[in-house]
Amino acid sequence: MECPKCKGLMMLERFSDFFLIFYAWKCINCGAIIDRTISNNRQKSLAARNPQTVATP
Image (cartoon, rainbow, N blue to C red):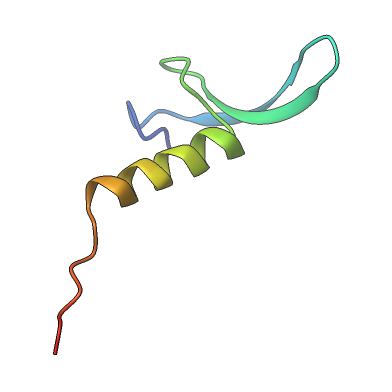
């Protein structure tokens, strides 16, 4: 996988909190982290920025 920030190599890494264990992609080059939640939020943000124009008949 390629990092969207720096185009570096992304590796799957295990992260853990007190109660939660999850996996996310981490860039070896810049340290950017992308998981499912981050990806979904970015897609929603981009969709809100670029509303689809609806043609009225």
